[in-house]
Amino acid sequence: MENDAFRISVIALCDAIQRPVPASPRTRETVPPGYGRREQCRPFVAAAGAGLAIPSPFEWGYCLQDQVPQGTRSFRSPIPGGCARRVFYVRDEPGRHFRKNQFDIPESVARHAGSLVIPGLSFFEGPDQQHMVKLHLPYILRTQSGAGLLFLPPINRARTDGLMLLSGLVETGWYAGAVNLVFELPQIDSPVHVGAGETIAQVLPLPMKAAKADAIFPERHRREVRNALEEHAEWHAIHGEDRSAYKRLARKHIAE
Image (tube, rainbow, N blue to C red; front, side):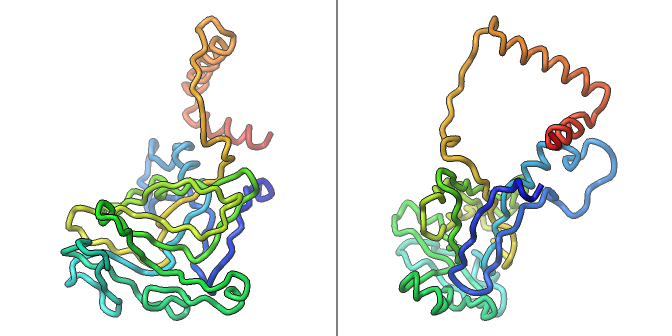
């Protein structure tokens, strides 16, 4: 139910941002007919629809110069030795206050937050990090105290161009900065083109206490082990009678 949703505050640092939205369980437009499709697997669908989808705040890419779309601004990494063959590009979006690879900060924000400079793309200085680029989000994400946000590539939506988001866990219960996403650039020559509003990350809330876990291995004679094995046998019997048993049982537990 909506009232059970974990609340994440999105504090915009500029006007008309591409807003994060609840992630969709749908991962492809056309689903082939028949049984056994991934869309019928509840764990797959539940993972794809978990948390928020983070859209790209602007159009950008990484490619050879002759592959740069018309009307965009192309540039190279300012770090010596970075990106020798390919260039980056961004597209100005005046309606979203994004120009020349930088967001315009309204006076109403600057009055409280001070002088801010938020680039679109920026780069690492270390020579061992020239295969990565940072994409800055023009908003702050905050959660309740003791909670954090796990930033992941879009779940069950693999890219085919080799661009890879590096995962990060941010302690948004107290961290007051805007997050920047770190992408590892493809080492293959396929071009990268990312549209404004395209989902580029998925963010999951979790208690920071859950970030650390221990695995325990109870002895086989323990009651919890015997219970788990008996429940395992019962599950297989139920599933043998109804291939959709997991969905039915999940709906029952949600209702409870």
